[in-house]
Image (tube, rainbow, N blue to C red):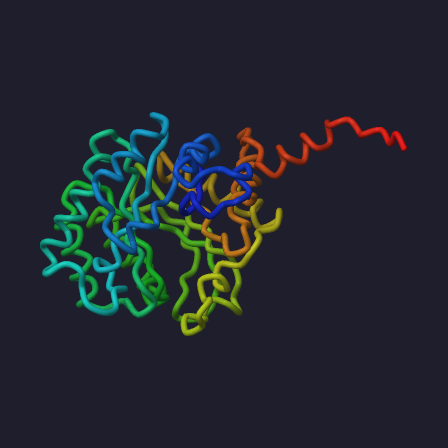
Length: 292
């Protein structure tokens, strides 16, 4: 089974008709896709009440991939919000409770920074995180190539299987140590995650620029590139019962259109984009006769 979705639901303008209120966007989004990645949880641990509201307003078949808080992955800069690690994890676990209770939380995604390289200390960190997360499904995504270089790739995958990590497989540019190759190997028989970051190699290492997020994920996949992934997803389906595909290439508003394109290639029947609905309505309207 393949489920396709996007990172977040607020910034995909081509999904919504003009005038759609922010509070209504998740409901509208869930008519288009069956899964979404919650990115706001990376910047701040979300209140359980908010997570409960998102859970309640989405259909029964809908699910969430929740991105781990930045203090849990080594991204945090500046003064910590929580007094210690225990309280940070306790707050995060509490926020997940409503989604877990309703069976709508697919996994927590731990995406580590480019400086989190393959060494003994960081392996210990991963073990500690899994212990803290207990029974909750956790996906792991690296950003440093050392985890998949040479023989280390097989050792990394074996470690993930042993420790119970779900593999978050990336499509991203080959841009040195701060990027990883696409490794089509599942580490969990139930779930694999595929995240499309785009292939903007020239914009990948722009972290010092004020608009680096807008540059990094500025990319539109073409038909040939998505066709390659149709075959790759066939391979992954033989390794995991479920594949969640998440498009993150939205700097130029391309994620939703690319997701719909892949859905069509896979034989799904996606709902039309709002822009397509508007265009069709305009085409169907009779021309106004010029009286004068």
